[in-house]
Length: 543
Image (cartoon, rainbow, N blue to C red; front, side, top):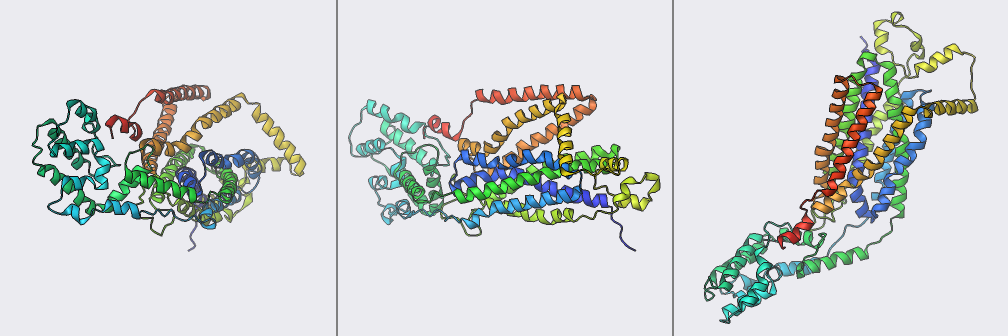
C-alpha cells in the first residue's frame, strides 16, 4: 500500500526548517562582526555600513516580490529565496579562504626569558636583593619600596614622611586580578614589608619575606604558560600598566599591527555583495510564506500555527548566538591551533566566524531545494468545495497559488494583462495601501523602532567586551540567555494581555504606544546608572 503524505504537513515542515535557519543567520551575523573586523582590519563605521547591505536590498525588493511572487507558485518563490540565502551565507564565508590572513605570530622569546627564573634565584642562600632583580617581582614591587626595604636590612633609618608617600601604593592593592600574577603572595609580601618598615617586624630576620618571594619565583617555573597569558591580557587591555614585561609585550603587539597588510577592499566587496543577496532572499519566506499558510489552514487553527512561527522566531536567534559562542571559541585558523599564549579571553582573539556561515548555508541548501521543486499538485483543487473533495484528497491538497487570484481569473476568464498593465495595477494597489493612516502609522513606528534597536543590537557585543572585559564567546551566551529570553517573555506576555482584555485594533495600538514609551524610558534611564567595569575598577582598586 502506497504511503500517502499530507502535503500541507510536508510543506510546513520544510518551511519551518528554512525559516528557522534564516532566523539563525540574522543573529549569527551580530556575533561574527567583531572577528571580521579584526581579521580584515575593518573599522566599525564600515562594518556598520556593510551590515546594512541586507536591509538596503530588502527594502526596495520586498514590495515587488510580495506582490508578483504572490501571483505565482509561492513554494517555488520561497525555495528560490532560501537557496539565495544559503548561497549568500556561503559567499560571506569565502573571504576567509580567498584572502587568507596569516595568524599573528608574536616573538615572545624575550618575554619568556624574563619570566623564567635563573637557578640562582631558587638556591637556598639567595638574597632579597637578588630576588628584587627578578623582572616579574621588579614590576610588581614599586622601586621606592624595594629601596626602603634594602635600606632597612642595611641598618639605615627611614623617615615617617617618606613612608607616608609610599603607603597608598600597596595597601590598596587588589587581589585576584586577571591582569596580574600571584596577587595573594605579592599582597602577603607587601604586608610584611609594611610591618617591617613600621618597625613591627625584625628587619634583621628577612627569612619570612624571602620565603614568600622564593615561592613567587618557584611558581613562575610551574605557571609559565598562564603567566604569559596574563601578561598578554594586560598588554592589550584598554588601560595602561607600568611594568617592563607588559610594556615590552605591548610594543611587540603594536609592531605586529604596523607590519600587517591593511588591504581590505576585496573582503569588503564580497561580504557586501553576499549581504545584498541575503537581503533579497529574506524577502520571500515571510512575505509569501505567511499568506500561503493563511490560505491553507482553517481560521480556528491559525493561532496554533502562528504560535509555532513565533516560537521559531525566538528559538532561531537563541541558536544563532549559541553557534556564535561556539565558533568564537575556535581560532580563525581552525583546525590549526592558535599562537602560543593566545586564548578566547584575549581581546585580540579572532574567532572562526566563517565556520558558522558555512554551517548555516550548507544546512539550508537541501530544504530550500525541496521547496523549490515542491510538486504543484492539482492546481484546480482550489476550485473544489469541501463537500466535493474526499478525505484523502483533502489530506493531499495544498494551495500554492493565491486563492484570490484564482477567483479573479474565474470572474474574468478573458483578462490577459500585459507587463505594463500589471505594473499599473501594482502601483494602484500600493497607492491604496499607502493612503491607509493605520498602515502608515504602523510603518513609521516600525521604522523608528528599528532605527533605535538595529545599531544597538549590532554593536552591543563590542561594547560589552570593551567595557567589561568579557570574551566574545561569553557575550554571545549572555545575549542568548537574557536578550532573546526577554524578547520571548515580551512576546508571550503581549499575546496573553491582548487575549485576556480582547484588545481591538485601536486599543492594541494604544497598548503598543504605552509599552514603547515605558521601554524608551527604561533605556534612557541606563544613561544615569553607574557600574563598576574592569576599566574604572583599575583606579578604584589601585592596581
